[in-house]
Length: 487
Image 1 (tube, rainbow, N blue to C red):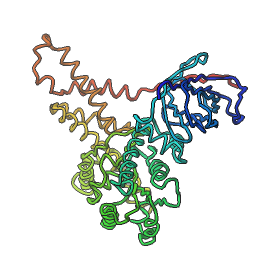
Image 2: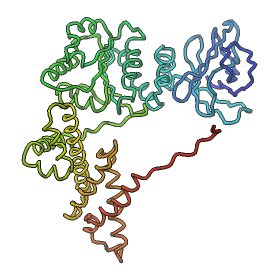
Image 3: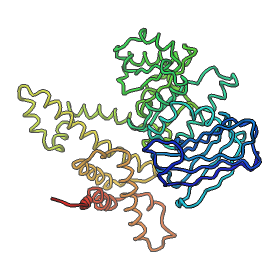
């Protein structure tokens, strides 16, 4: 039906004509109009959500079904500001979602904002949200979990697909899912347990069971004890922690993968969750886990709880772990003299080794020295590999100078030394920029530059990068003077 519209205006008057909690003193005046009239209306409700699908206000009124409905007014109170920006409004008639619109509240609160309503029939995603998700107990937890709009939108799309397949009898249950994210604070556990678990079980907590792979692999809780709980649950939320993948662990995880792959529990959906690193390690070590989850059944979270990018495993990690073995060989064999000369404190360490006792201190010092050697070698390795990947060539002098630069940086390292971002910045912000300045300043005819000049990294480029890049990295910004009175 056409000619249906909403009018809204923010109202900062504390005297509300509707009942509202005493703390909710921020109001939005809402008018729903149907100039041509609606028949058979018993109840009208309007629900307004923020751009990130957080419920902001609800208005509801009863109506005599024998009379033609034309207009309803609501005063929606909230304890949060009705900020300027995008909102989504849904209109329900007799408990069924019928129309929706997107409202853009202006900065000014003096004028009404008028927007025409659109039928839900042409907007399946909005219909699915208003009918299936908006009224659930678990949906508000998305706001409590600080999840961002892009992730919520993607989640809604996936849940709509799963629901449609079950309604059309193409699937008997929600498929097995994987939730992975950038770091421990990305919200993967909350999304898997509170949100996906709530959706799969229809808010029935008795149908949800949570466990960790460490509980099974370490024998803290036997699989036989868990089997009964898994069998009677609709959703099994499985945490993938940082595990020591020995033969026993690999066999246990592969056993779980087999149960998931062959649907040993017909009515149960498994939801695995963990950090990118832990999930990737599990996939690498346990081959039966590979191929269980596709992009369709995977949710990736960024560190700020939005949509994350696909995690690309860094193959250099394996090569560096092999390099650790070489470093250990040097520790115990032919490379010891060279190591001693470069560290500068091995003579004192040898005297410590000769002392009786103090084993923990000896182990800690040995581990610290090995990690320092490892991080320095790692940064040097990454730098050379990155330059080679970009078709750049290091002269012998430049290679020695780069090793010296990294050794100096290692002596003053922070928590970011040696990681991918540190190396990326050193190469792109330091070395390549230095090379570009040298080439362009020394070429009389820019159009006739030899291509080899654009590929060769010389010692002077490393020296200038050390002077500019490292000095910039170590510069500190003084804290601003605090505002206010001081005693």
